Length: 266
Image 1 (cartoon, rainbow, N blue to C red):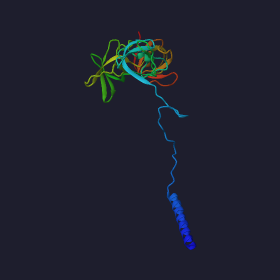
Image 2 (image 1 turned 30 degrees about the vertical axis):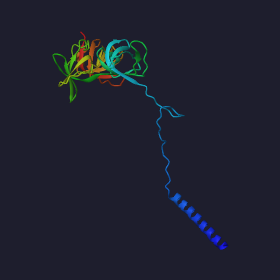
Image 3 (image 1 turned 60 degrees about the vertical axis):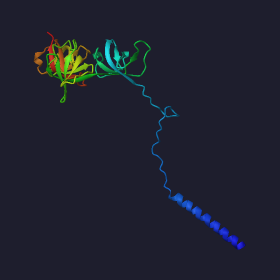
């Protein structure tokens, strides 16, 4: 009997040894999991602990300008509501803020804050005015043709008083920006109504002449600007001129422009 019990005990011990060996073998063959090199990003509606949540509170409104004033305009928005839009030195705009006119189509970006007045007032962080920039290629009976690129041109029908008062007339070769209401015909070229035609221009008194460079005091800014012309002999110091250029101005001091058309006040 004792001999039989020793045999049973030996068999049980052998089974235990085989089980332990099998477990160790399985653990050894199991591949080791790699830890992620970057922490997982979990999206949540509310901040938790030290997790920073970025909230974009910017809103946009689009519409047509119905009234302008000092540092503001009234806009009839696409949602049929009216808004009093204020702007200032921090407002970004794709055109000069002074060039915003009645009839222009634009989009206003702001922080979502509005007053409870009628109409509600808001402050514009950015203003995107509907406009096109190109070169005048032809003067027509009703307006002019504006070439934007090799494949795009417009026939511009200017509104009364939309052209610069300082210019005797637009001429072919001038670079201009046309501000309009976003409406275009399906004709070729498409027709648009220009509510304002902006011509890059320096108006001021000639201070001095050196070679083909005229040093002019810009009436708009009071700063000196060097205007390069084709024939300096036609000018003299002390005369008031309107120098049209292509919109490019150097960052030098004083800045420099290349005039395409120059008109002298008699």
